[in-house]
Length: 428
Image (cartoon, rainbow, N blue to C red; front, side):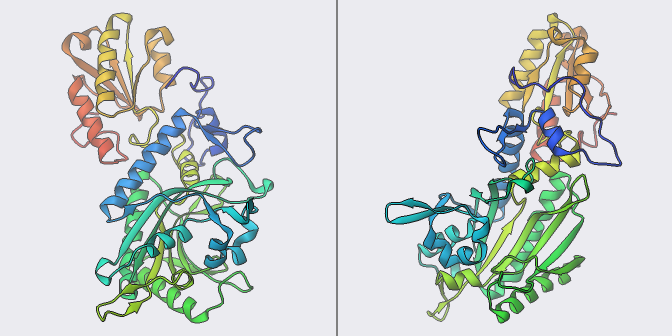
């Protein structure tokens, strides 16, 4: 970690099994994120260690989506007001949007959602039924005009980086696409060490908040319920929690105070394909309307990281950890070997740093690095043999191993996005 962004003091909280730490407090103590009144409420910035966690999470999601057949796109964070009038956001969601900005004779808006842009990306080219399902994804910015009283840490912010994706498919393909999205969510939660508290089938409620099309709602809700039932997933149906354009499956997590929030979601949308006049050419050479499946594997990056801070108490899985290995030379004499080990680790894509004896006794350095997954200790004997004595974050000490073997094993666990600190053949 660069100088100037070290942990504030040496009194990191000890994680208790009975309660989760508050991410607001711990995230600042660990120098993951912070805020400044000159930037504004609900607009946190990411410090180097927090940015490392975020970057690792984004890399994981992009690769998981790529392997699942998604193509990635970029779209602007602004759109004309007319775009959101067509999508329905302006009539159903404008209270959560920032005011329009005048640009000559036009008005543009900070987008509250990515789906209208993705609908236009689909519409920009002709499509055949042979291309479907067409899966596109983006880690993109969006903005919500949250009131100051509800803002907090990373969970309620005004600038959001959303892991969004949309599948354009035939009606017969919807169930398989929903199942595929739920499987991506399950795998991501396993890699993150996250345990959802429940699945919710979010249905419309009363009032004018929802698109008025009872048959559309019935079909979409039945599709989602069918997938959940066939997969044997326990869920609770709740009215009043749907998106304005369609029902959704919400995967719920709980924070340190027991408050629930939605981390991941899958939605079925018949509305926006109609609004944007989307179509594909079927086997009969006629035009047909696709269905739009919205899915967010980790939802917003901000909320995901907030939950991970609380779940792991800052002791992230190795693949997510801001620093994956600290190299601890016992004395200045071993510093050359320590620097070489760190260089090799960096060359292999690991986040490694050397903490030398000038920063305290070996015991003090070990305590300061107790959230780091791997502590590589090099004394005179290890330096002479080209070996490393590894201490794992959970307290295990491994017999000295060749430096190359240590790096290879750590790299393999990181590449596998494992929540384990050492493989089954490791020593205890």
